[in-house]
Image 1 (cartoon, rainbow, N blue to C red):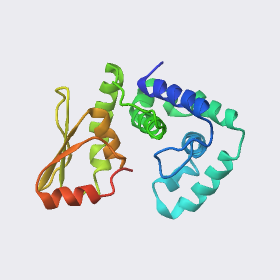
Image 2 (cartoon, rainbow, N blue to C red):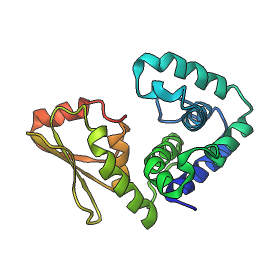
Image 3 (cartoon, one colour):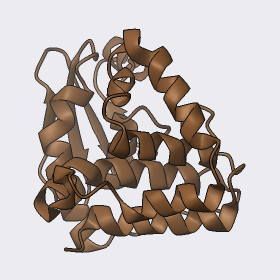
Image 4 (spheres, helix red, strand yellow):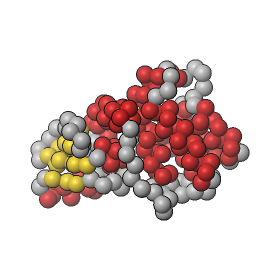
Amino acid sequence: MTTSATLERQRLASLMLELGPDAPTRCDGWTARDLAAHIVLRERRPDAAVGVVFGRFAGRTAAVQAKIADGDWKELVAKLRNGPPIWSPTRIGAIDRAFNTLEFFVHHEDLRRATEQWRPRELDDDLADDLDAALRRGARLLARRARCGVTLEPDAGRARITARDADPTVIVRGPLGELVLWMFGRDADVEFDGPDDAVEALRAARLGV
């Protein structure tokens, strides 16, 4: 089953081959090789991926990721393109859509936006709908470190998303894709509406997983 997550995976893999392993990204100073290794680790080595979330395991995660990154570049990208092993639940379309849509969209943009010639892209309807649904499910987790209320207001007539229910509240407006990127701690084209001190605190907050 082809999902928006699957399509973003394929687009990312193709762009990686086009740009090469040393291409910069906007993801923590990683190169394309580092980013590919991160994704392969996440999908094929769940035993070592816990350090992505839990800091005390970060050393083991980094060591395994570095070993994966040392492999042949084309083989590494092929693993990314082919997806997780057959035993992975994300082989099921509905789970892939729920679990991977945000991941692959954000990382595709991490690579796209590190190139000088990048331009904003118009999201197709299926991708926009899947991003909207996934963001609504994950917004509270992504905004958990904010010190104020956070309400997302996508354009194109989409309903608001309450990411954190607290006072004071800051409304964050922008295109859906930009809101997704901002919630993952990336630079994005969004606007803030709220008390100045709350906006300042929100700008400084460490959002994301």
